[in-house]
Length: 631
Image (cartoon, rainbow, N blue to C red; front, side, top):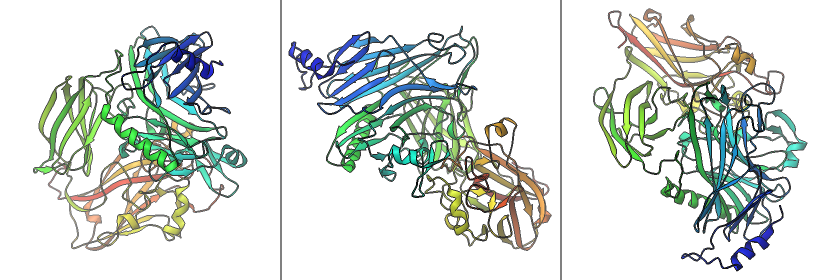
């Protein structure tokens, strides 16, 4: 479609007046080949299937040249051709006003793919508004009662940029800078999906640029062109539509062997999140977005990033967008307030407070909308911008292994739902002797847990712990002496991690070792092994006698995909005779039954999934006298 800038000039010359703010009105033209939208700042070309084929900032070059484009794609998780583009069409103009133009491209099951390939009715919407240097995008996905069983492991919009122009990536303040080119990746060695060892020895992977929604840094990411002094950024004020939140991670921007890419992935099963699954007879509908693709111009890549950050903050203040008109989008919202205290009138500080649809646990729900915040020093919370509906409130973290739950929280538009004081009763199994870590679903407080977005983190282990992990209670520090991941590759002659502690007297009764696990994976985990129920197998010994084991399934690939936690959480409570704890020195040993001496390279499975591991969240030892029950 060669409509070009002539189209825009003709429209403006035909008498289209400037708006009151001095900005040009938004124009649209549609024919059998597709559509073109323009607002005097941005010009977009969209083909008849909904693929974005051209994007211009004023009179500059096409930012999608040399193989770039924007498209909606899915992965069903089925065997064979599980992943494919979602062609829409024919396009329709949904709204056309002086202030905006909204167009949509619909994909109906069976129209271009068999119904059993992707049995969802989807519609991709583009919105261009007057005076804005970028465009909005949202997608609706629907399963009708007459549709067959349908699954979607991944729903994503991918924007591929001109590989000859965009050379600086930025996903947050620390992960930004010049990127290897597609050519450099192609000349390297592929060692894992989207992971390449370059000729200079560096390893580049898309997983190093993932975002963890819980970190609250997911709102903006993208690419800059130093040559054109132009940036393209994805801006999303909210993640309410992602599901499995807030402990959900997703792929953002990264380099590929073809083009630089920006990926919007509102539904994906990475790091243990779940896919969407609908059964025959089930009616379901959800709106993902809107997000905003900002196109900006500045003197340097640093200035472009700062400007993108500024735009992200401004759009967050406008959420929910009042210009949105869709039955599935709630403009009017409510809020929920309250205070959470632990038994004994202690405030539940820095707890995560999550509102999720009633029924499915929040960590497994992908069909509804989620809202969350954290408590302050008094345990108080306020969750703003909540869609009207009925929710389950869950509190997690605050150094508690078990969650708090309150069902039946009703939220009305324009109203506050005051819940008052909620009492969270901790699970106490006896007198606490010691604890390593904080129960908060993350291994971030341990060594290298604060700088984990790097492929092959196991490579640091031999230099960090040449004789393995030895943690002395009362002397050692979690941030220095306890690794964020317990790999099943070991150093030295003893493959066990050792926890050493002193007791003033021998113990009687029952002892309880509670182990919270942020992520887990058997050695050489594979899809086949997951299906067969493979688990970790970490033997737990007390003073030389085995008392139990940590057996947990694969939880989501944090080890080989540059993570420190997964959405699923593991909890193991091991009870044993407290008489095994003696006066004086004691040792608890944690040992992978399948463990290998550390060996750099591929012989021990560094390719693909890497070593097996357990990422501990926290470990607590309690003792209850024989007459007491766990309470």
